Image (cartoon, rainbow, N blue to C red; front, top):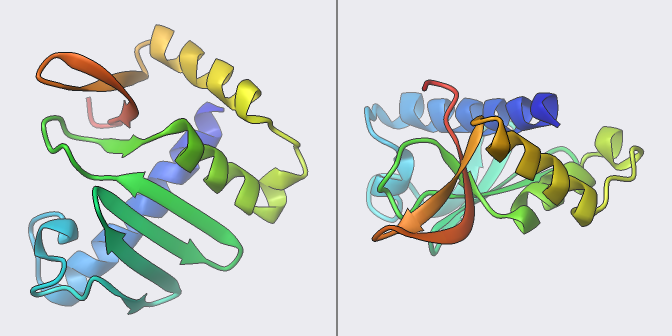
Length: 135
């Protein structure tokens, strides 16, 4: 699951860097969505839509949902549902037949190993995972 998580991270990072380059940004494009960066659009091979607390990005058969807020900690933020959506939208990964329960158990192992952590609001954990490869 760690390799899939790294691919998820790379997918998001590639998309965000492309937007940052296109619009000359040194901050997350989400902070400029609706002003400098269109809330919905296409850049390169990516179709995207900034909404609520995050973004939906599509490329080929892959659907990638991720959260950006709360912006209390760095890293890619995602729910079990959004990560499962990514895994099961990819034709290559769909063949593996990963269920949400299996994915949840694997993500729990990554929390236990210190690779993932739970996000929180004012010290209260919420059901959002954080992955920061830079720590």
